[in-house]
Amino acid sequence: MSQKETMQFQTEVNQLLKLMIHSLYSNHEIFLRELISNASDALDKRRFEGLTDAKLIENQGNPEIFITMDAEQKTLTIRDNGIGMNRDEVIENIGTIAKSGTKAFLEKLEENQKDASNLIGQFGVGFYSAFIVADKVTLTTRKAGEPEDSAVIWESTGEGEFSLENTSKAVAGTEITLHMRDEHINLLNEWSIRSIITKYSDHIAYPVMMEIERTKTVPAEQEGEEPTTVSEIEIEQINSATSIWQRDKKDVTDDEYKEFYKHISHDYADPLLWSHNKVEGKVNYTSLLFVPEHAQQNMWEQNQDYGLQLYVRRVFIMNATDKLIPRYLRFVKGVVDTADLPLNVSREILQSSSTLDSIKQGVTRRVLTMLNNLATGDEKEKYATFYKEFGRVIKEGIGEDASNKENIAKLLRFASTKNDAEEVSFADYIGRMKEGQENIYFITTDNLNTAKNSPHLEIYRSKGYEVILMTDVIDDWMMGFLSEFEGKKFVNIAKGDVNLDDKAEDEKKEKPELTNEDKAIIDKITNVLGEKVENVKVSKRLTNSASVLVRNEYALSSHFEKMLKEAGHDVPSMKPWLEINVKHPLVERIARETDNAIADDLAMLIYEEALLLEGSQLENPSEFVNRLNRLMK
Ligand code: ADP
Ligand code: MG
Image (cartoon, rainbow, N blue to C red):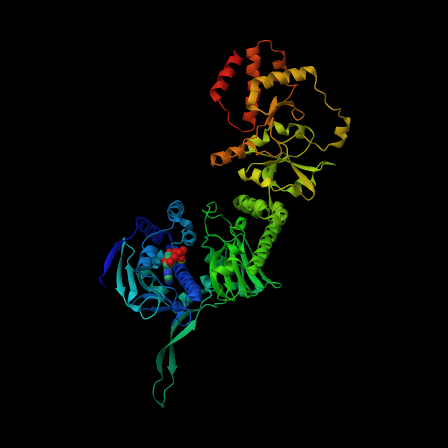
């Protein structure tokens, strides 16, 4: 059936097209970058699939991208002999917007039209940019490995619908013809196209060829006759087609690195930093690694693709392979090219390859070094940008990558009792420790305010110890894997007995004996609280507050336990103990109070205060309020 069929674009496509044509008017040249980039992706795919299915690369010829123009017809054509598409794929890929980011893209675009050109690539809506310069686009494509007459013609004016028609195409691949809008026919000349390609697509690893019309003057054969001009078509390669990572890094400009990054990452912004290295040794490879400036929207999703592009001897093997980089560095983009794997490397080989394992180790170290250099260098703000976006992700590495734990720990930044901003490193902390201090003190809560006002801090404050305030949910989990840093032990001040390594103080201090009054009050409160706490103790850590809850060294902190429970995990509850400040007026009053009902209310109240101060919820808020009201009467 070769009948022409008309189909509607998905609503979002219409919306997108309208916005794009408007907002990208001044940046219209990016359409070519997008189409060449798609052609390059299609060539990559065909090459890779051809490794395991030779049928797909039969009669392919040289993989290349071909550009022709016809000033009379006002058309520009981009042709590739890549993987192509079958009918269903055409409908799926360029009739709908299957990608979840598109809605967000549209919202952002409406918000800020200026950034549109940058946003386009990120959300993978590149193909539609053709309509910025064209009022009709005709795409003819045949999928590699499928018969000649399975080709399709897709055509649209970008106004709500497209048509599809079966056709026959001699070779596999895709050909896209743009019928240029009148205001853009001035692009249809060699120099305009050449300069756009050199600006945006020079790094494309496949040759971008162009048909160029040259007029030559032929001298007259006989005297007295006029010389004649003839025009000839020449075919010339426009881009350099050397992959950027193969080049010597001193020959690559920053702008070239940035364009390349945008090409592989689909990001709209420039990368924050990059590192380009040739590694020779047990395993030989070249890596070009980029750290983005912004996290991708799906960074926290469980199964998103991440990883680096793998090339073997400059032949593209696969995209986004997590075999080259650990999950906690999933924001890193880049390329690894090695000569130490076979070209026909299969997925099975990739599953367990010691070559890949060594590359992964090398790449991981390289990224951590690059980040550490940034962290310790002069560009503090740049590091803060990085940390804001990716600080939480690298924390996963503390638990997942034992061999690099120390290097990851160097990258971490926190607030502390001496600095509210998230910028204290463990090294900073150690650098200003008190004389004789052996431990790094920290507390984990779910927000800075709770941390700063925690009763646990009182004794440390009064003795002039700095305490690191950790406020990410992941921190508690992470600190379970970190017992020391540069020889100093980590101590969570909300867990276990106070253990100040304050030697001078310790000597002065007598072993504190419990007085009879202390014992009496402990009994009183224990009776009231019953099973709510493990036990009740006289506190050494409180100076201002009446009470505080303390957890066992091996217990989870309260907010982390709560989070796990909410996420449906079965966590054994470990009861905290309650420490009381026997010098506090409220506690003294419990001791003195002769009315048992009031004493009981007060005892319960100091427990509830402790819960509130650690950021926990009350078991029964209305009872708490009633109790307060009774006491205030
Ligand atoms: P993206 O490149 O980010 O996926 P595009 O809008 O640029 O988004 O392209 C959409 C899809 O259309 C591509 O993912 C690809 O499947 C298909 N496509 C576009 N151009 C070509 C081409 N030249 N050859 C084969 N498939 C193509
Ligand atoms: Mg694209």
